Amino acid sequence: MLDEGVIVEIVRPGTSDPVLDGEVGELVVTTLNPDYPLIRFGTGDLSALLPGRCPTGRTNRRIRGWMGRADQTTKVRGMFVHPGQVADIVRRHREVIKARLVMDGEVARDRMTLQVEVSERPEGLAERIAGSVREVTRLRSDVLVLPPGSLPNDGKLIEDARSYR
Image (cartoon, rainbow, N blue to C red; front, side, top):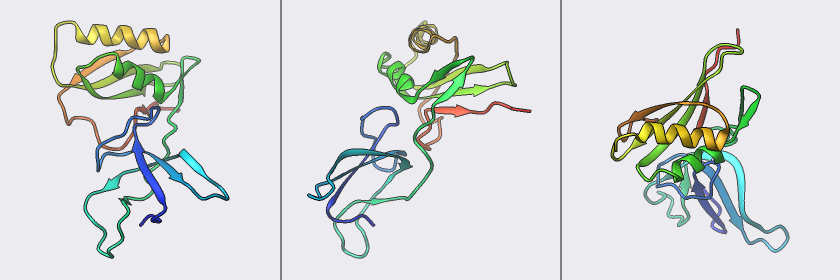
């Protein structure tokens, strides 16, 4: 349960774009306490807004609790990749609903794949998205085009699935 004097938002990591209720994103709080005001303070924590009213009768929104960290910055082939870069790539392509950049492979053999959920699949979309990845990150990436609802609702824009053995 949240304090009644706190304004809570859940935004897509790396952006200030709000997500739908129930969708996981970064917790952003505003509190107008005169001793220590916070205006749109990004906590760096992942959570989601719960639907419905609180059974205790309180009127503020409820959150699912702590679900991980929002900062998913990772290093690939000597370059840092940030969630904001993934969000920038998504903004460039109106067909993309949701995206996740997955790093896999073994030590010194990093491979990037941008998984994208799309509303429609025009000819050449994967190639255009791959070009945007290259332009934004300066790295090459495969693009895997998926139907809506394929990616998990966990707030991750970047997943590091590499093996470090």
